[in-house]
Length: 634
Image (cartoon, rainbow, N blue to C red; front, side, top):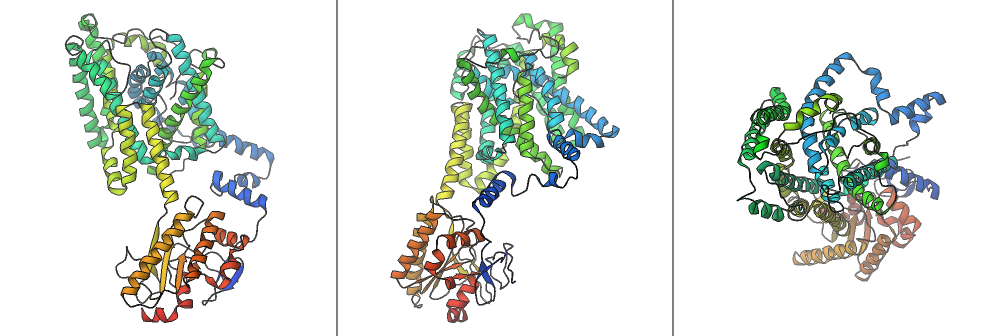
C-alpha cells in the first residue's frame, strides 16, 4: 500500500505541505499517492482515544502494568509510582548522602531566617514558619520526583495568604481564629493540588502564561519589599493594605515620629552585606556558599549586637520568644464546618494554585538543566499530600529539627529589621527584567499580560493582580482561537514548494490560482472568520492579478496541513465558501487534510459535495493537476 509520511517539512514531491499516513485510499492523485483517512472507530474507541490524549498525552497509562508477569510486581510498580523513594532509594549511596548533607546544611542556613521572616509576612508566629520547613520536606522526600526542589514557605504565597486571611480576622486581636483559618486554607490548598494531580488536571495551571507569571512575580516582589519597610524603618503603626499608594502614605505619615534610626542602621548595614554576597555568589560560582550562608550569618551577628548593646530597650523591635518543640497536631483547629469552612476553601484554592504554579515552574527548570524528567501530575499529588499533612501538624502552605528543639530561644533578640533585610534581598531576585524585555521583543500581547499582572499587584492587591493575569491570558487564548492566522502562498521558482509570500520575497503567485493556508483548527469560534478571511484574500488577489493582466481566477486552493481538527461549524463554513465560489465560477480545492479532518469530511458527506477529485495530497499536486499550464509559466 502506498504511504506518505508527514514530517512537517518537504513531502515526497517537494511540497512544503506534508501528507498523512495512508491507511486507506480515498482516491489517487497525479503522483499515485492518495489523501487517506483512518479506519472508522466506534464511539467508545474515539472517546477513549480523546481521554488518553487529554490526560496522558497519548500514552497508555496501564501499559507498564500489562507488561508485568505477576500481580506482586504490579503492586510494587504501583507503590513506586506513588512513592518514588522506593525506586531511587535502592541506588542511594554514601557519596550522594554526603552531597545531600552539605546541601541540607546550606539550605538550612538560608531557610531558618527566611522561614521566620515569611511567617511574619503571613502574619503567623515565627515557629509556624519553622514547622513548615520540617514536616513538609519529609513528606515530599517520599512522594516527590524533583531532585532539586527546596520545600518550605515562599514569599509570594506567604504574602497572598496573609493579605487574604487578614480580611477575615485581625491576627493581633484574634490570633487563634486567624491561625485556624490559615490551617484550613492550607488543608484545602493541599486537597486542591492533590486532586489536580490525581485526576491529571494539571493543564489548568497552564492558563497562567509565562509572561503573566513574570509580571505577577515582579509585582509581588515589589509589594513584599514595600511591606518590609515597616520592620526596616522601625515603624510600629503600618497600613494593612498592600498596594503601593497605601504603603507609601503610611511610610511618609510616620516619617517624623515613627522611624527608628538604630533600626534603619541595622537593616541598611546587613542589607548591603546580603546584596554584596549575593553579587559575589553570582559572579564566582565557587563562592556560592557566601550568599547561601549570608542570611544566617546576618541573623547571628545582628542578634549578638542587639544582645550586647540592649538595643531592644532603645526602640529596636525584636522577634522575642519563639516556642520550641516539635510541631503540635492541629487537626482539631481546622474548620470542617461553619461559615469559615467556605472562606478557608476559597483562600486555599487560590493559594494552592499559586504555590503549585511556582513549584512546578522551578522544578521543571532544574529538571531541564540536569536532563531528567519531571512528572507534573505526580508532583501535584506529592505537594498536595504534603500540604494536607502540614495543615494537620501546625504548618502552613509550603528548620529543622535541631533548631526547633534547642536553638529557637537564641532568636529572642533577633531584630525584625534583619528579617526584613533578608526578605528584601531574597525577593529582589523575583524581578526578572531581562525576561520582561525578551517578552516585549517577542510578543506584545504577552507583554501586555506581563504588565497587567505587574500593575494589578502593585497598585491594587495580589488577588487582583492574579485575576488580571488570568483574565489577560485567557483573553489571549480566545483571541488566538477566534482569529487564527491565514497566509497567502506562492511558488518558489523551479520547485514544487509553496511558501508564505510575506515571508519569502522570492516566491511568485500562480496565474489564475489563489492559494491560502489556514494555520489553526477550524471550530465554531473561528469558522466564520476563516471563511471571510479566505474570501478577502481571494478578492485582494483577484484585484492584483487583474492589474497584472493575469487570467481570471479559476481555482482557490486551501492548504489544510495545519488544520488538526474541524467541527460541524467549520464544515458548514466550508460549504458556504464552496457555494460562494460556485457563483463566481471558481473551483475550491483542499490540500493535505489530516486524518481527523478527512474523516469528519466523510462523516458529514462533505466529500460528496465537493467531489473526491478536489482533495489533493499537497499544494504542489493540486496546482500541477488543476493548473499545469500556470505551473509551466511560473
